[in-house]
Length: 133
Image (cartoon, rainbow, N blue to C red; front, side):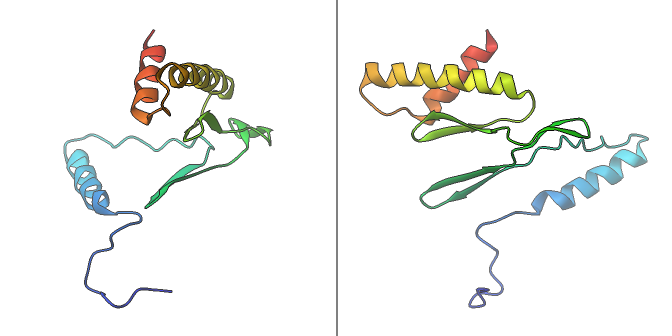
């Protein structure tokens, strides 16, 4: 049901179209200078996340594609790291699976040594350090 009690107020959540005007202006300026904007690249993967008051909901398709061919219909793209932390991956599925398994092990060891549940910032830092090596 639509909320019509405040019709003139901006929407407080959901998708924002603020950048579409900026993108149109940039595209016009680029074409005047002889440049063209980069083309969007379709990867075939659908991953979405929604933030709400009490948390985050993640969703992903399960198709593994190889260009225009569906290589597998049951490819997990939401990976477990900790009870409160999951990671979505698109691209090379095997790399994402191994990386998140390693992170899950590291995070569990960290939690056992500190006696606290893992923080997202800790997992992010560890993942950046691991991927940089």
